[in-house]
Length: 390
Image (tube, rainbow, N blue to C red):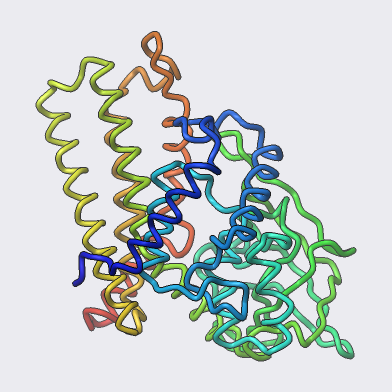
């Protein structure tokens, strides 16, 4: 495992840090800033931020230049994620497209799909959402029931998706449908790239306990998609989806570590403000969380080293998803223990506003569900990494 970056990568860090110092407004750097901005306004600000990054050459850091990327190394991408987290730059508005769809298209897409999808996606001119989850299917992707029936050069889609991230702001959706009537489980599935701005596509936002409407339900009623917009081949959706999910579950944890460490420091500050920092039980728990964070950092460096050596992470990517999501959730278990009865108020002592941490705590409850639940990840690790029987 390599814990250092090359001279060229450190030079990139210096350039990026200089640009961020001039480009990230001071208000954005304040903890909890984004929690106070209305959803639509925040989305607009973040979308424009993505375009500014693209125009400045700080987008697609490790993507080939032919797709609008910078042609950098995985190490530069890790530095990029870390530096943005350090200045509290906003999270991208196009996470599903950037992290998962684009590399999948680069791997198995047609030349036309590569040309038409990747660059607009990188500049966030087109926002993508993901249509995998369905009612009565949950994390069991093979149980989906949305159908796609060939009609001339088109595929006609009918069905429902749920917990669709970015549903309200999405311009297009990559979605899984059953294109072979009567097929079972993972057979007869296809991944389609579908226009959300057409008749026959209805979005209903889902309001979360934090008040945000990041997710939504999507209903397809005779929605149409050209057959050429099938990604990875008709009937080959399961293999395409597994490839895509490997990008999702294997994402480097360096940016997560940096952001989670900031959250940890805020929890420690709250403990001091509440006079709990001398509580021996709480101190022991905070120590355990810090140790978990450091394990996350070293695992992230291990993954980065593997990627730089060209290794196929395969099923091991489930270990990354499992580790970062549970570490993050554990942080807020400690936060809940810290607050106790004070969890009922956002300002338990004068001058100590904990509403942003509380909102983030609500969000943390979801991370062990989406992207494959912790139970699913443990099964994958047990069967495919450890070789245990089913």
